[in-house]
Image (tube, rainbow, N blue to C red; front, side, top):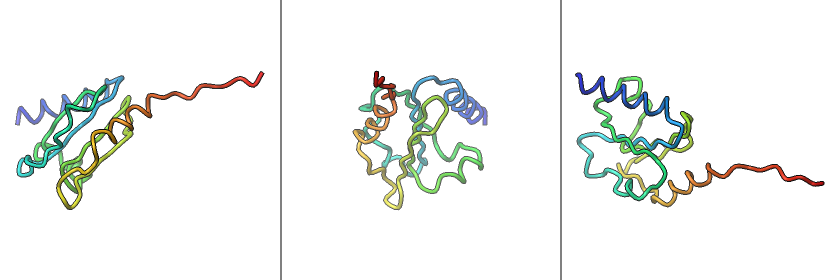
Length: 113
């Protein structure tokens, strides 16, 4: 129980106080063979792993299949990838990296003078 409270507090603090990118990978203990294998290839994010079994019911009901990856930028969800019926995330790490890279591009005003 203590570990669960610590994990939840950690996840909340990471998401609430982060000024950068946070990638949250959630899976179930029975599905660890389908963990997303390329997490270490994704650059410029803090990676947090958690088990669905340890989450509050309110979080569990938001997740329909595992594994699932949530991508946050400054507390805002900017990407989500679900395992679906195959129980595996089919997206390549390049697709996830592209979402990160594209969100870093800021639009600059161009003067017409």
